[in-house]
Image (tube, rainbow, N blue to C red; front, side, top):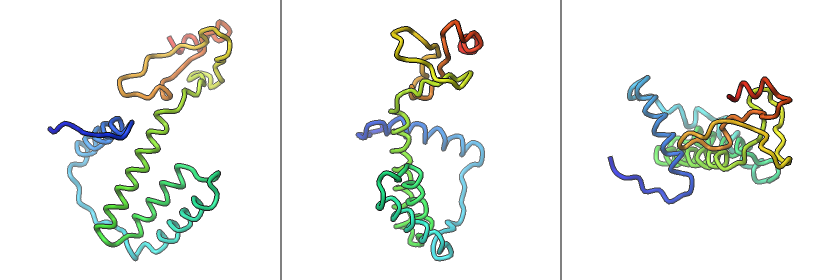
Length: 159
């Protein structure tokens, strides 16, 4: 195995997760070969790609990771040239990597994993409990629970 040389912040975590998922897929299904299913027979895909591109260019306030990813996916589905298809699929993966990085760098939502209610953060007191993130786990995905005595069930759930 060769050392991984990645210079983009947060991409290493994505590559590690991607590699882990590919290993799971290979273990479950083995190496697979399928037709691409792309190209002229997918005429609707080009229309959808153009529609998402127009949407993304038109109103930046309406642009979301979903619309960006769908634009790239539909562009790939419409492609029949293998070199261009591969390039489009790399763009799909790059958008997915950027979306994962965005998720990984978000602040914790501070919602109780037991009751679904917000956990207060402006009291100056420790108002929550929860596990430490596992290695490589983004903090925003770690469950948190109310710690206040007024939340006995949440306290038990987070213990």
